[in-house]
Length: 211
Image (cartoon, rainbow, N blue to C red; front, side, top):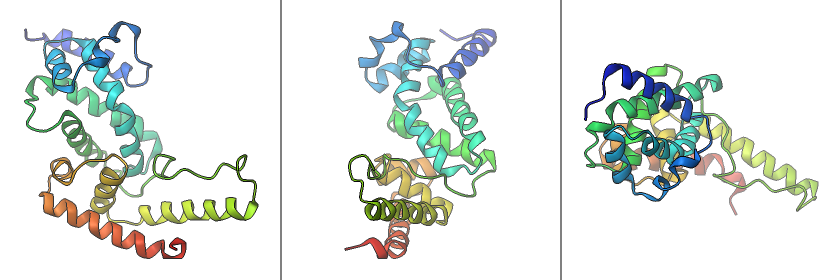
């Protein structure tokens, strides 16, 4: 059933609000459904199904945007705009690509639209777990770990945008090269090439910590 413009606008406001909320209790059943089933339900106007999609992939998209958008204040806006756009287009999702890849592709367009792609934001512990001073109180070890993270953050920030995007999508978000290609509008080979160049640069920059 087609959604009226008024109903769509109201639903978009609710979807936008869902980006920053914890999963509601009334869609616990939807959390166990597969992506295609959720997308089909959302296309029919089931907001709970789409909220499940938001909470399933929101953290992953947030981490990606945080590394690709220089203005930290804009990160939430880009993620929210991604999901609002996805809600508007969910009835056009045909499953040719995975839902995750489809969302990342929309997100990448929103990042480009933001005109704020300059420097990556600092990585978090999903990339590498910092040494907990409470576990290892050796100040030399803690200092070395801090220096390593700082150097890695700086090296990531200096990568060309597409190389950084390919590296983050592969190493942190676990996308395949075909999926990265779809996301960045590149061939699978080009995506692999960007990742390879990023790896080579990072390996050279981080040579001091290689053993």
